[in-house]
Image (cartoon, rainbow, N blue to C red):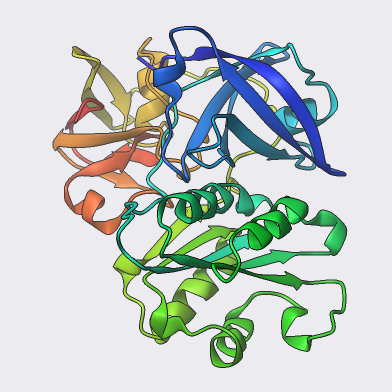
Length: 358
């Protein structure tokens, strides 16, 4: 069951003109459910005009802060992000699933590492959680952050990053790259693309000393950075991605009118196990994802973005085959083991057996 818990809104802090930071408090008895690992996210739900929307936002607190915080940047036309920025107030209640996500690396207090983080815009939120946790729990490690924004006024957590640099002298380096504002050093002006990465790695950052790189932001930026990191010697295992919600549809969608499937349409017998209960139903091989079919058959299957980004709907194929249209969340080894994103999954065999419990 995709269980949601109430979270009390303790504080709403204006971070930039179009972004807020929420401090959330679990109810008595629910605190353990919201113990998080750095880099994870929360999935929220709310009804807009009678239609339930689910949106995922990364936790921006470190593990030792004693608080649960998320940053939400307003997206043009985004129902949830606009509501959170304009109407949400302390004392309100949000519904959220427990933390999820694998955008992190193990903390090893006795090891000296060099982490490299790239963040674009609001993609800073999970990277901030990671770097704060690393600085607190790996006293011998250091972190280099390249943070891309349009202009100074759009930089989230600018003052907090400055404070962290002062508190951890020599262990945190922050490079602000601004697209539309000129800086004293030309290297720090423009877009973070392949050419910019090549220049940064030649003049400013020793990639050879990097143990793990974290990248979170728009897909084109992430792909360019990852390719450049590989060219400079990093392996895929050293590069961690988090596509930052750009695939989530921003607007609340009207409920689609139901249409009867053609009698001649190819069908699949789908068997889905969730929380120990198994249900079998028929679904078309085209036009409806496995997740949508499960929901239509009254299964409370977990999901959030429905865009192949967040991995909330992850399940494992036990029998049969299915095609994933989009995958921005699963690692190659997970796909080889049979895991799928059910929101992007369409059967290609007459029978498909899937489990959310594995």
